[in-house]
Image 1: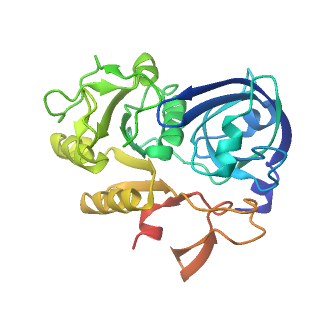
Image 2: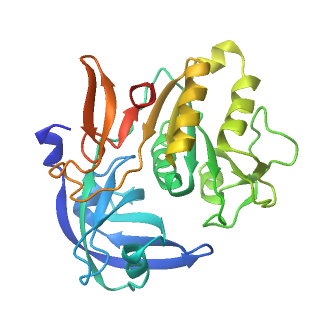
Length: 290
């Protein structure tokens, strides 16, 4: 990430405007943070001081941002002390946020069938990207989301037909449905209407259902656990599809100073160590899974 891009990061005292709990210790928080909202792009994340008692911040992906209204939104799951303290914050409180951080997803106007694949805490960036894509009618995106805990929204049967879907796989995210974007949900927990399998299983069925010309219009965008991303990258390679992945990694400073989040990346000059926070988190899949 260039110094120019790094200069887009701003610290902001954001006001929590809403904070809602969902099953599975999941929470959605909306904050009024106009400077961050103005600069944010799909794939960006923020570094949050969960509580003044805890000095170390936590990196959390943005799920949505509204530049005009000046708010940002995150979805997170309680996994440790930081997110536990964050879950106790109330609407009306001020919270210290730094962002937006990271290299975002980039779309290609020649790839008119974006395939968005999100797993677990990798779901929010896919929602953000879908939100951006819906404003360009030349794209026909399809979103696949997988979770082994209850989805943080009440799914409903989809009215949007998607090629290749097995009978009974009809559960979708209502927000995406309202936007006119097709989505389907997968899980191994037997949730009604969900595909009983992995996100890559459903992605394969979709890809196989398309003709050669339609298949060439696909570009995959994905975020989720490392094993899932590895499987997505393998699927993309099998079908010779462009693929961008957003990596999940433990971070300390999140602004490129500590180099605590480095990963091995294949570059034109050979292997190199890149920082997920500022050189990523979005990478071309073939450069990190090779």
